[in-house]
View 1 (cartoon, rainbow, N blue to C red):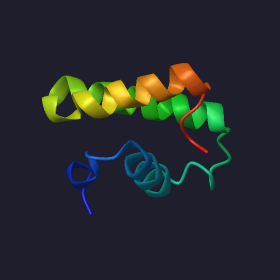
View 2: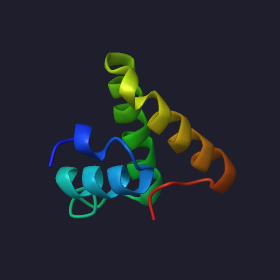
View 3: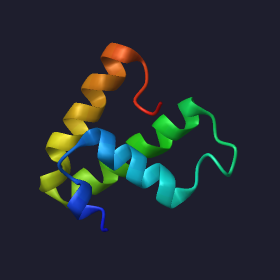
Length: 70
């Protein structure tokens, strides 16, 4: 499964990326995971406009709930 295939749903993308990057195994906190994913998603959206909606959704959830990764 590629990053592009996970571009349609924020929850799927967050789970996919955290699993592939093994954040939990490396001992990252939820806040660190959110920040790392935000940076990755921002960079991806800069390179590929198809990620803009996903970035907007990520930002919306982060602002309203204070976190995205659970």
